[in-house]
Image 1 (cartoon, protein in one colour):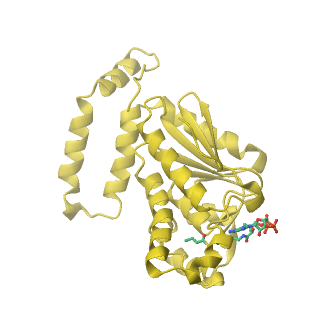
Image 2 (cartoon, helix red, strand yellow):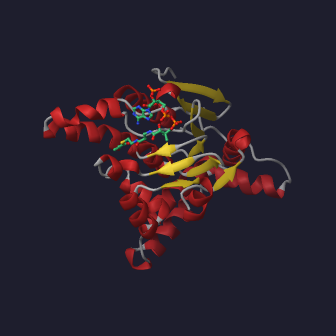
Length: 264
Ligand SMILES: C/C=C/C(=O)SCCNC(=O)CCNC(=O)[C@H](O)C(C)(C)COP(=O)(O)OP(=O)(O)OC[C@H]1O[C@@H](n2cnc3c(N)ncnc32)[C@H](O)[C@@H]1OP(=O)(O)O
């Protein structure tokens, strides 16, 4: 798997760590970074040796959102160009959200605007206690539109009302209380905490983890009247007949660790 700068890849067994690497710009997204991250997520999704993706940022920040040097040119673009530009960021966030494998964010520092959207699109997020979060768009005369499907899901409508409209900055403890992140760790230990979650994911059945991700995506926000009972029965029946389920149950009964096969 080869990557374009400014994105670093480190492989640790089945864990692919992707590091946004524009530290002097606080890892702000330009076209190159958006294209690199989108391609890397899709490549990792298809790589059988990779089971979990870990996203983090180089230097002080996790990600300062869209590159404002580039965005300054927006006013001179056509509507079609502005749509195409926004669609590239939307496509990157969707690639994370739709990745069949779990994506864990280690929010090593500030996550602003599009950077906060990236946190929200990930399945699990661990924040350094020094990290701050901000939907700064309205302060810039912009709209947090492309990130809204993920952020509203993660923090809920009431919190979104407050932070979308006010653009107030909030700390990691508040992000934890709102449900935007799952844990807060001292800054020096945040990466290890995120890696520990990745190792926990890798200890579970790879197919079951991926099916669980799909289950949450497909069922969240739906009611029992939407056919959830029949769908849940079909999904567990499908899993029960897999070699992976046989191995997981047999390993428990034989008091040994399961030997999982690689998945696509
Ligand atoms: C659809 C999506 C829309 C969007 O995402 S719009 C983008 C919204 N983003 C923001 O509003 C964040 C802007 N950045 C900041 O507020 C701060 O940065 C941080 C709080 C993230 C970090 O603060 P600190 O650690 O003190 O760094 P620093 O001195 O402000 O920045 C270091 C260098 O990084 C550049 N930079 C930071 N963010 C961006 C950005 N988003 N686009 C372009 N450049 C950025 C600065 O200008 C500066 O540069 P120099 O060293 O030359 O002075």
